Image 1 (spheres, one colour):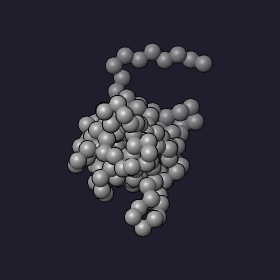
Image 2: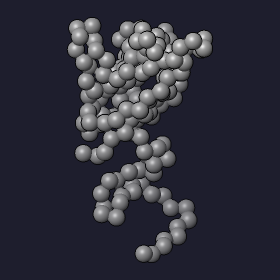
Image 3: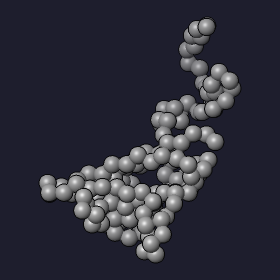
Image 4: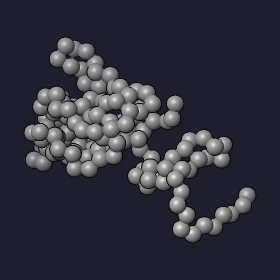
Length: 140
């Protein structure tokens, strides 16, 4: 194996040893997640910070759809979530993905978005101030 020492190179694309799985230096810098978001879910959702997120659809209280800026290769991805507690010290909030809508149907993720709700530990819908989600998937 050789060592390459470079100073002040401007690299536009990185690839693995087989010439596959290209990535830009900025994508590496932003992280390997395909998308991530931190937002306030109380009242009208407000994005605090994000990567590859176009916006949030406010479906109802504590029910949001996160829309990607650039579609993922498919809906076969993993979403890792977290939410802050209610702040009163009495309850913990839970994030549920693929929420069952008012018709009783599961809202499956798509390549362009996923839906999630927040509730207290008893299952009651609860708006949450700090909601976090990171999306991971392979290149299909």
